[in-house]
Figure 1 (cartoon, rainbow, N blue to C red):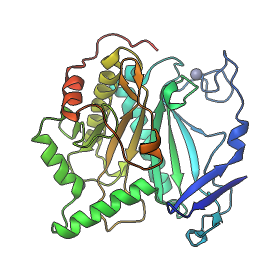
Figure 2 (figure 1 turned 90 degrees about the horizontal axis):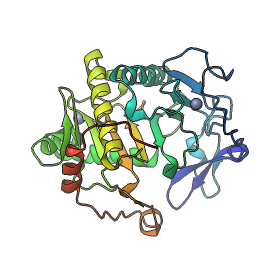
Figure 3 (figure 1 turned 90 degrees about the vertical axis):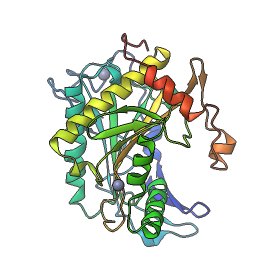
Figure 4 (figure 1 turned 135 degrees about the vertical axis):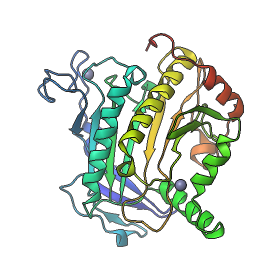
Length: 321
Ligand SMILES: [Zn+2]
Ligand SMILES: [Zn+2]
């Protein structure tokens, strides 16, 4: 069964995809993403691989927003892809070269541009789950792209905040003002010509970092060639800092957040969010009842202190797994 069901209390869609339960347990010495597996080209740098167990798929019933209701159900028409960052099975993403990251960004951008012409797609979510603590069983360096037929709740909330800010500040973009303010403050971790990386003022996760475009832009499609190079460069720096912080692969979630494809009148600002789950060298951050049941985050580190630690975390040696 592959459906979207309406969560009436939270007013959001839940993607029910029972085929995902039957995902095969991978044999220990075989990886479908490795050259020679028969599933990917024998020679590749970066490769877009259609997800074998997609939560959103092009060949299912179309999404109907009017299906929202007490027991509302509709089709999850969309697409799910896996982005293979490298053919090297055990290469941690922090060890990808800047040129390699640039190729990853090009794949993200090309896929976003393709989805932008498809009226079924409302939002292109580019992301990565990294590390066993985030539930990743496959060490092969990869991220994902979900093309969704609706705007996800957090992006909806960000849009509403952006709209409210613009309405009360003469049309100004919320994130443009926030970035200006952060660049004057103490939480900046890294910066280059086109991007700034900082621990946000009210970080919810330990060592949470946002990478924001300095220029106002909505989606990956808006990035110029030199902005893509700048993004590759700062991505490489931040990933190295994360793995160097405790000397092992930092379990984290990376969300590349772009404006919804069809809502052109709200100033949504392109940015990346890193949500790490390690709160000290030997303790994980769990999303427990107050976070998951109530939606309020408890942070046990001061964002200013984490920014200082991340500034000092310089890439040194290859992190162990
Ligand atoms: Zn592999
Ligand atoms: Zn902006």
